[in-house]
Length: 266
Image (cartoon, rainbow, N blue to C red; front, side):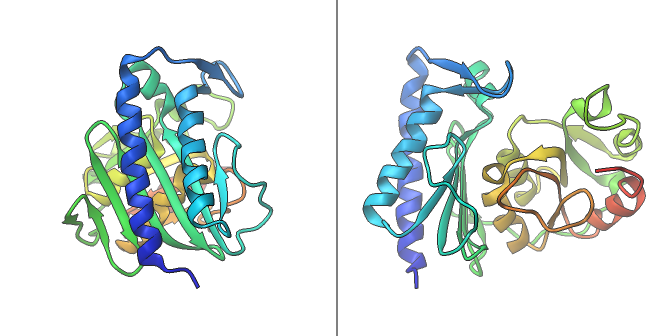
């Protein structure tokens, strides 16, 4: 059985060290590549950061397995045992263009159950961290449980892509939600969007396609605080494939599902 206090201590230390390395890279020239399309960017810093974590994990916890966005980890067909799900830089486009609004995201699972979540907003030096059953913190500040709210009073994290012409959905499906909400925001990093729900800066987040490393850490935090995370069909997320995702405060999740998502072919 894993010593979760030990795992938590090492994970936090490595995240902080990786963040410092990323900050030092700001003055250097990036090597920028593309993956699935011209806007799906990856840099040598993404790759180097993932390799940094893999080296540390394999040295200290050789029996643990790793799922990483950049493909340097293990090839997984299940979540048996202890699995680290890592996004070395979530929000690479922001990293490249802005040098802010990106995060290191790590979710650590045991047999499919979330145990430790870490989201590190590197530039603002905000480490959101959670050990299951022990609350969620932003640095040393313990975050309160999420309170119920309603759409008319909510700030919704939503990319404008989904309410303009796109290849995935009819943009009119989510337009009523945008109209009825108090406001919408898009930060370009799923990890930051979820951390902002945890810290009450945003009330919900919706996206049509998200990979496990984008949401693995955030799910642990949101559920620890009493929030709800599902697909847009209201189903549990699959941590081995891409999903549509609705992350929300309690009460608000039910309202969004019933009033705005029930007619969509998600």
